[in-house]
Each structure stands twice: as structure tokens, then as C-alpha cells.
Image (cartoon, chains in turn orange, yellow):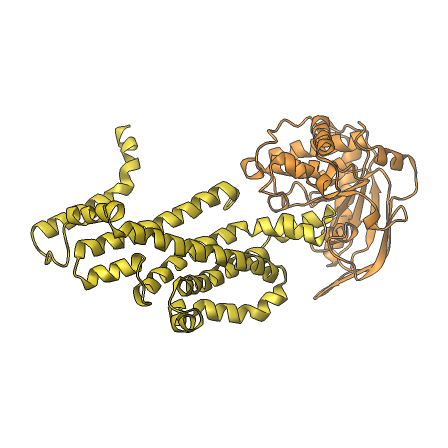
Length: 265
Length: 253
């Protein structure tokens, strides 16, 4: 797929994609990050996992510029956020899609913001829909679609700009289990085809391990990286992957660290 | 099966019962016929008044005044509402004034507006505008303020400028509330216009018609004018609801 010439070029290089240095964030009642350093690897699907309230979402929200950090520097190949193209998928798809636009126009919206002419916008949307093999009537409005379909629309909306990096904040946690399984496969498919650097916040360890090349395990706040687990099972991964010894041991290892961090609370 | 089909007629039951009771009461002369004419006499007065008499002219006059005041109110209040709603601090600083004047009966402003604009149409229209504008302003401002934060963030992360967020997201987010404001505004404008027509040296309008018929003791005409005013209020509400369903199709979904 051509979708991500950018991402592919980026993936061939080996330097970290995102460098986070000295990141600090305080909320009224707690220090969430204190001088946090981390490198996000290029062209990998990375999950962030940790105890409740440790700041998983806060981390990607700050990286994606949804709200500012108190201190610190986040660079993408040495460039600030406003120089790069990125996609962001919210947990609450119902409040993230635009109900006054059809699914098609929702997906095309970021291109409109970028000033892409209408003809080209339509082509790009059609291309991404075809590449994901999506079979939804895109003339429908979001409120006429199921939750999974709406989230699929917002994932396509994030991908249509050909992003260098894709952020997903618990994208499947508002979906029923059947839809969650389907959406995991869709996400894996996107990743296999584009190798876009992807950062996924998940509260489901099985999902995190199943989908990821790397799992960042965070401590309770102030959060620091406890371990950066590698999981290199070949893709496409299937149900069978989850029965293999490597998957089981990786998951057990992550769970052990997680519980140790929780008990420290 | 047949019962199911009859269910669409349910809303008519109340009307039929009312007419039946009314007919019985008048035919048995339970109430003095001078105070309560029969349904037939009333609807005859309504028909002839609307299509051959002065009632039709008065009806049009009241429609004009109500629509003018609602349009002026919307033109003034919607931009101000968006402005106030886009900054919560700005809104908080004038919230008391808006709530205060929104709670002030617009009819209490008649004497002031009479002094300012004289006894003509302008006074009636402007008092109604005043009342409707505050209702619309309040709803628009709240609509903008309560715009889903996630949706605004979503537009921002896609690189939308502040102006674009305001135009593409906040404005559309506020549409359902704006229409609530418009519907309440037009109802209030009608109330104020009808009252103004009764009391400020009027020569036309439904309010004047009701008042005059009562003064002349032409009871069928008075009831006819009341029904005409009711039909107008109901019709205006329905009109705005229809427009809302068409243009704000996502409302409540």
C-alpha cells in the first residue's frame, strides 16, 4: 500500500522516532510525570500499560499536543509537533466524530483542514476505505452506525492524512467484545500494511501484548518506565498466537511487573 | 390489526371530547350563551373572520410583527451568543445581566419603549425583540459553551485553527441549543406582540381583535380570535420544529 510512503521511509531508518526529555506534568493533586525521559522506536507498534491513574493517556495526550506539559521537550525526528502529520484516535468515538457530517466527510475532514482540494480528498478517502476493505455505507451519518463502525470511521480519519505516527487512546474499550476482536484485526492490518509508528494506550494486557512489538510498563505516578518489553512474534498474529508459549510468558511477565507496581501503591 | 391503525387517531380524542362537552354545555344552556357561544357559531365567526372579515388582516399583522421581532432578535443574539459562549470568562462576567433581564417581564418595558419609539409598530416589534433576543442569546451561549470538549480537541489535533474550530465545530455543536432558543424566542415574541396589540393604542393585530370583540361583547368573534392566536402559536412552533429536524438532523442522537 502506498498510503504511507512517509512512514515506510521513516521505518527504514533506525533512530528513535520520538524523543521525550525531561517531561513534567502536575495536576492539582498529584505529580504525574517528573523529569520523564523516553524514546519511542520507529515503525513499531507500542503499547503503554500501567496501573490506573498512572498517566497512560496523559502521556500520549501530551505527545500529541492535546494539552501542554509543564516542562520538557518532545521531538519527532528532531522536529516539533506542528511540523509533522499525525493521527489521533479517541476512546470516546461518539464524541469525537462529527454527527453533522456523513462518514465520508468525517474521514475527509482533516484533509479539508489541510487545504487539500475536494477531488483529491475524495480519492484519498476512497483509497483508505479500499485498503482497509471497509464495507460500510459511507453516506450514513455517525448516529446511524454501530459503535464499531463509528470507531472505524475515526481510525480512517486519523489515517487519511498519511500520518508519520498514530496515537490511539484506549480505542476499543467502549466497544463490545465481538467488535473489539474485529477492530484489533483491523488495526493489525493497518500496521502490517503501513508500518506507521503506533502508540496504543490499553487497559487490556492481552490486547496490548497481542498487538504490540513493544510494551511500555509504567509505574504508579510519578510515572517512570519500569520495563520496555519486546515481543517479536511474526505477523499477522492470530488466535493461535495467543496459545503459543512466547505469548503466554510475555503476558505473564508483564502481569507480574504490573502487580508489583500496583502493590507498591 | 384494526386497532393498531386507529391509534393514529389518538391525538384527536381530546379535541373531540372538548367539542362534545362544549356542544352539550351550550345546547343545555349550562353556561350563559352570551359568555360561551356554541362551537358552530364560533367556527363560523372564525371562518368568515379569517376569509371575509378583519380577523384575517389582524392575523397577518400579528404574524408579521412576530416574525420581524424573531428575525431581528436572531440576527442580534446569535452572533453575540457565539461570542459570549466561546469565552466562558466573558459569559460569566455578563451572566447576571442576561439572567436579570431575561427574568424581567418584557411587558414591564412597554412604557419605556413607548417613550423611546412612540405608539407605532416599532415599539411592539422592539419589545418582543428584546424578550426573544435574551432567550436566544442565553441558549446559543450555552450551546457553544457546552460543545463537546472531545470534538473540539479532535478538530484541534487535526490542525484546525481557532477560527475553524469555532466555525466548523462550536457553531454546529450549538445548533440544537440555538433552535431551542429560536422556538422559545418565537413563542415569547408572539406573547409580547399580542399583549402589546391589546394595550398600546393599537388599530390592528390579534391582540387588538380579541380586546375589541370583548369590548363590543361579540363573543363568537372573541373566541375566534383566541383560536386564531392559538393556531398561530402552534403553527410557528411546528414551523421551527420542521426546520430544526431538517437542518439539525443529528439533534438528540
